[in-house]
Length: 291
Ligand code: MBD
Ligand code: FE
Image (cartoon, rainbow, N blue to C red; front, top):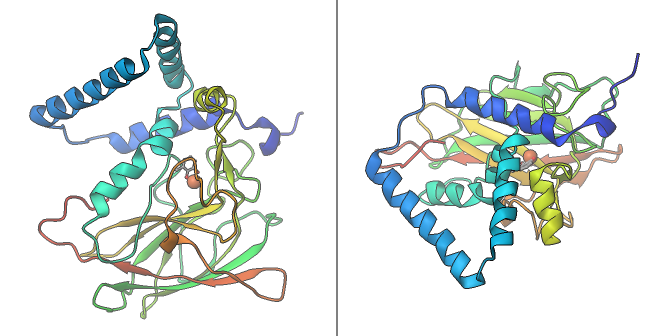
């Protein structure tokens, strides 16, 4: 019998296929976009591409290279990865700029709904010998007027200390480093987890090929993903980062904001403690979205 080793057996096609299947599942029953919107946005997108071709005097060789590469994004299942890395940050910006509560960031391709529900104070599901620096995270969820939000949910998901996400890499328990914490009467939570490693875009898929062909780097800084929700409030999707990470200033997914960088303190036992809370915007009639 051969053992599965996450760090050797993770393949772009596997995480890509997983992300594509998860997205299709989420899309079931999605609303149709009105024809006027499709027409206006598709026309402008195509005109933007035409402008690039004229500006750079694209050759037929380059056009064919582009066509081959676009075909491979689909074959590798990397449309979710490609879009979330290079496009989603603008969608996030457009849809949250009205908010006065906490800053958010992009969801990315590796969210899974319905992670195990946990009390306000506890450890996220992890392996018995989970590697990595222990992190204790204390926080409170409030409304923009300061009211504590009891029974709010903080869904947390993140990569392990080797940079791998459960359900998108082989050999990890299904819900490893994924959990839904419910806040107490004061809207507080206290979560134990481990610090994630920086994330490298798979080098063996279409996105990796673009990165290599362009001479870019393939890294996202280490990050924690959260979705914070409470009745009557807009869902907050965010990512939190660690100070000093060399990719906080050049995240390939352009998803770092200064307000999202944590300030962890050594706990004297080889781990760290951090305080970070969330302020949710009440739902208002003219909010464009709740995502
Ligand atoms: C990630 O972990 C991520 O958060 C994003 C946005 C894109 C690729 C991998
Ligand atoms: Fe991520």
